[in-house]
Image (cartoon, rainbow, N blue to C red; front, side, top):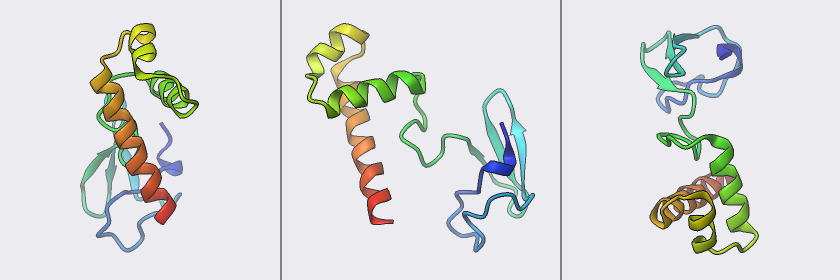
Length: 105
């Protein structure tokens, strides 16, 4: 965890997106949370990503989304990874929304 490579996702802060300003500290290593010194708010390292509030390892989510993008059926992923189809569909929905937001940005 390196607070110098992370920026605060707080939309209300005018310097949002500035990296290496020294305004972030580590709040919890175990939970991978940071504290923003200006407003005192904390946020998770995965905030603003497809992986936010997901318990599955990032590598598995990335692998599943890659297989989906190449046309692998959800039923095959469900059988191979032992993940419920609804979970895979939620990942697809979140990844699509995130990709669209990045595209518009």
